[in-house]
Length: 116
Image 1 (cartoon, rainbow, N blue to C red):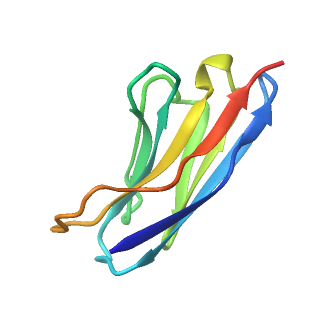
Image 2: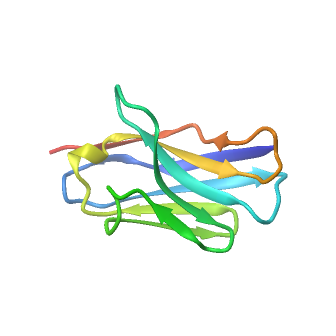
């Protein structure tokens, strides 16, 4: 089983920057994928970015060039810059543990609000 603890988030003005982090603990394979998804009010949860344990990354088109995902062992980070009001959402950490029937694992969610 995997536990995820998120931190970061908050209120930021348009054009500003914000960072999120998520620490994974528990029992999981060394080869895994961590990432971030977000859900805005009235919308479905959507992919933001993922990163494998090998460092391969994948980004949603809407955040390419503005967001950077990174990880150090079992902690994943999301550095967000040039934030737009459209980035306002609850951001969820995600963990995929190969061959685990309980996939996917989700963090508790953290609110990011971009507003002047």
